[in-house]
Image 1 (tube, one colour):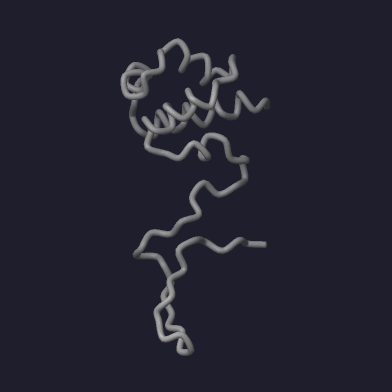
Image 2 (cartoon, helix red, strand yellow):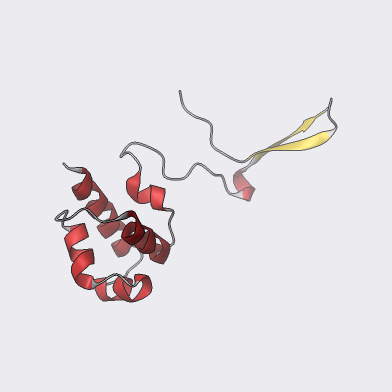
Length: 103
């Protein structure tokens, strides 16, 4: 699978997860339906500008379209899931805001 095909699959999956038609995404992003179709089909290499506009319209960071397949798409934890602990030496509360690497 090429990089363009991988990006196309991710774009299609995100669009469908957001229950958007190509026309909806085109309207939100300012990218033509024809270009969205070409990207989703892996038939072209989209510019960073176009991918950025599509990611913004989908409400995801651009890195979610570009990240390696096995890489986590979200490292930041929600406030409710952040671990808290007190640092007795410094006298303040610490919060774990990102997930720890499994390595």
